[in-house]
Picture 1 (cartoon, helix red, strand yellow):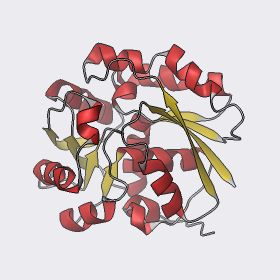
Picture 2: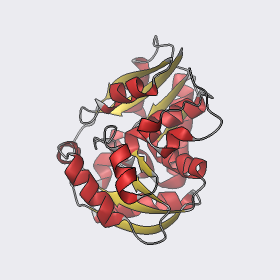
Picture 3: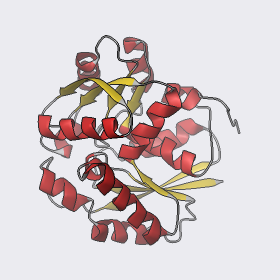
Length: 243
């Protein structure tokens, strides 16, 4: 059994995680601990506060007896908002607090793009323009070329959590540009676990979504690879461990 610790802010699209756990179809357990969000806003100061060391430390306490082998801070905007170096400091602090290998959703996107072997991506962000721009800057700092950015302008996570398949597909299509080898949809408040196959089939290229890459990152930290095609191209990379 491989146990992953996920620190998830608030209550928005957390039901993606049991769905992903089921689709993995192996001895993987995804333990979810909810952290406090404070103000639900895509404003920069609110995002920085959401990922503060104090809030993460309280979340880590909820994982103490879970047997987790790795921990991932499941917030894209709450990790990239302080930039590349700030995100590294956040993850280092999380690792010290948990006594475990640690990462965040923002780093998960960078690592997942590398895993797919692509360089140029299109960003389909639910965020306002400023926040979407910071995410794109983060990807660039990680060596990812951003071919285009589409920001939907949602100001709260609750708004994003209310989107269904149609809204998600519309944003992904609007963001996709010629030359993009993959499409990236940040925001762990967006329900995507059930939609990845349709998104990839429609766009004809790999699609990376926040909750999907968060679990993949936990598996990467735990040195596990699982073949789960229903979770998209990211989960069909070799070598495969099939349980």
